[in-house]
Length: 248
Image 1 (spheres, rainbow, N blue to C red):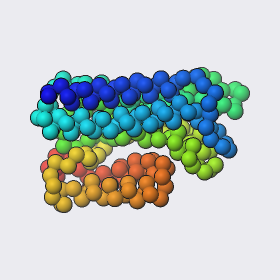
Image 2 (image 1 turned 45 degrees about the vertical axis):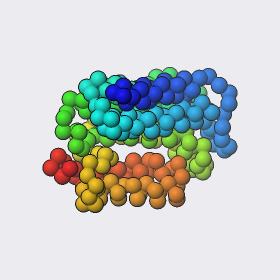
Image 3 (image 1 turned 180 degrees about the vertical axis):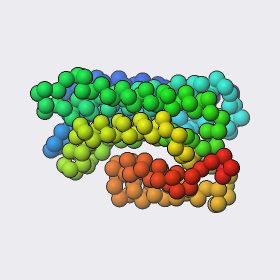
Image 4 (image 1 turned 60 degrees about the horizontal axis):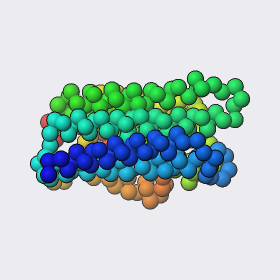
């Protein structure tokens, strides 16, 4: 029973590794109409990272359910997250930059290199989390899974969105800004609310419930484009409620 949560963690890792395979595979299967288009592998990779996020949530839930939390489980979780929500989204950003610069004859491979900033920030964030016991109550900096999922949604946003949204997703300056802003938020000390419900009173969960409400409304109205909006809302709600250990 004690190893069941670790199996979920390893499944998270498997999804992340397979996602990288699909994201980087050379292919001529491009999907979309008008503007620049994504590969089918990028869409599959993004979906696999969503699956990784689901099992990442479940491993913690199962660990608490079976009272099977352990130091090894914590380390496995961070190592799996480094791949699924650090390296894999970094490779996705690399591919997005490739497509973004595809119509620039002067483009160099070096222009895609900033994509590696994201996995570096993710690993830094995970290491900081493991060493800071206060982050069991609230986060310092955007959690790596939230950052990784925001990037993972970009191919679906480009595929399903309007020509204007497509142009924004594949605009290299916007891509560079996304890399720098999300990476910076990961390694920052900005107090961010934890989405774990440690108490069932309304007062203790107003911030989380507000974020859930915003997420549902945004998803209904904006579909996939809601993901970056929810990411921004996550930061804003955290700034408003200013989480700390005493408030939990």
